[in-house]
Amino acid sequence: MIKILPILLIISLLIGCGGYKFSEAIEPLETGQPEAAYTYLQKHAPKNSDIPFLFELGLVAHYADHFAESSAALDQAGDIAEDRYTKSVSKEVTSLVTSDKLRPYAGTRYERLLSHYYRALNYLYQGQLDGALVECRRATALIDYFKSDDKYDFFGAGFLAYFSGTLFEAAGEWNDAYISYKQAAEYYQKAWEKTGVEMPNDIGNSLAQLTRKLGFTDEFERYRNQYGEPPLRPENTGELILFYESGYVPPKSEEALTFPILKTDDVEDEEFVPTLIGREGRTYADVKLEYILRVAIPTIGSHRPHFGGVEVAVGNDQKRGVLVADVESIAIETFNAERPIILLRTLVRAVGKYLIYRKANKENEALGLLVNLAGVVTEQADTRSWKTLPNQIFMVRMSLPAGNHTLNLSFLNANRQVNRRESVPDVKINPNQITFLNYRTYE
Image (cartoon, rainbow, N blue to C red; front, side):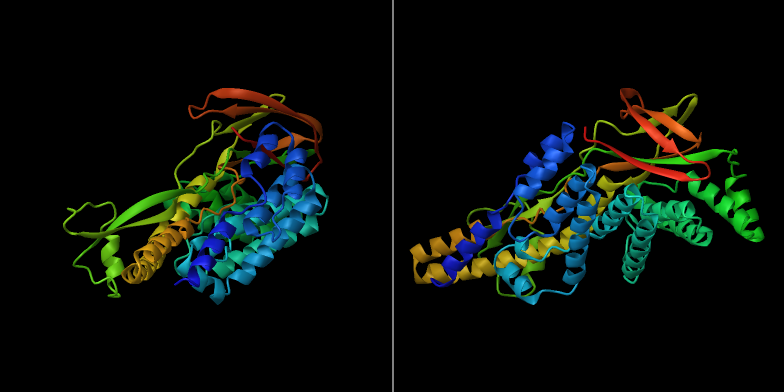
């Protein structure tokens, strides 16, 4: 016991160490200084950069127009995540003694998919459409890999397939665009009950347009009957696709829970932990109580941004954005699905610590007190996540005359009223081409 104590306490100190403060990184972002946010993260990078930090660094670098550096960070995070799908036994064992924060963090499935969205945008902004298409194919392969799990929820898959369809369309790869739009329609349908995001109508229009272009007569008639006659694009026009990213995905926080252990309990019984789960928050008379087990697990709640929509006006043309990804709903639903196993794992660890404490306390009360203290100090909830992700992503598709345009953006509150306006000048639209742009607000 005495040998174990210093190790546990040292680990607890290591768990609490961090090279940067998230608040220090987002403050310059919110005041329009992404370069300062990027510089801060570079200066305060942890010695061993891990997936959450690399995600933050990659996204902040993207907003600071360091596109190559952004992709490098996101690529590194993706490589680590791929490796971690192979279980790290040593750290898994350690986490059962100390904290879930020592478990190798592989990123959630939706985080990994969204990293491909930003990597593709990085290539687009560098004028490398082929590189963006590679990211689309990598995202498609990742979704196919996730689909091998019968319980896959398709969170984020619809948006990535839709995004991929627009990029293949921009490259003139009509068949790949058609396949991506078909997949997007399927994936949105599979996920909408939990995410609340229905398939955007434009996917149906795109399917009708592409089947007509490809000469798929039967499919064209079916899509036209289902979604209506697709709109024709006037001559000498191009298309704008704007992604509006609003707010922040809600972060995880720590929640303290209590579970009573009764004097009549057989704590060493392997069926004890499932019994204990049913006692969450319950109270018992002191005469029955042996011990109050206190644990910490993550929790997440809704934190909607002030702006929940966008309208884009160019001259007399105006278009309202369509919700294509509700990252908050995806994050909450993902966590809710994981919570039972997190709670089970946490209680198995806590009961193990309690057994060590009980044995030590029988030998020596002072030693028991120290063991109990070590157990409390090392019990921390795993709140790691990609915190700078937007809360929601809206998409605007509109045909515009070829030339340079000023985009007049109107940001909408929850009541669909305009709360703020901003302009984006000198957006170039090329004839018969698609121009991509993403825009972020943080309120």
